[in-house]
Image (cartoon, rainbow, N blue to C red; front, side, top):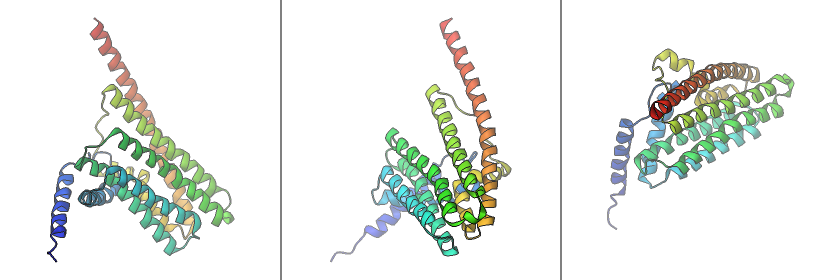
Length: 258
């Protein structure tokens, strides 16, 4: 039997992929700490392995969705306990890391596609809305003794999350359509920490406190308030940016006509 050279070759390709992706990362500006310091590096390594084994970005997106779905089903069905919380968080964060890998894998292969971006954003939308819906289900099943406020908090947080996703994605698409660019965002530590409550990874990590319902839902409510504040500030800022872009485009049309 001939000696196998596949493993050394794969390791070399994996390391090469990690190096390439390390040199071609998205901007650090505005990225919350968990995504920047943990999720992107994990996604980079997953993307490099996916490239070695010939997976496509769309396949990776679907694998991420499957992993996330498993975590959500566990959260909806398992009675809160330390073991259940760890299993849920590990599964959800695993799905989040794989979700970071699809875009990075695209940079190693085709460079991305409109269909791939559509699939990625659509699955993200399902994930964001389902996450809070499943917390609502869990609260209804296991924490009715706390009253209605955990349920109302989950509903409110779900609305905030969906609205935030829509506002930020729509703004990005309108900018692309018009050829405009958004203002540079701060790279300061303070700005990163302020954005931490909006990070899906941080919200997943908070599920580790799920065995203690009052602690979990109290912190969950604070996360919801922080996300509402971030949405309000971000929405006003983006509306102003788009109005400015409208004015610039209108002035350019006048200049061209004259």
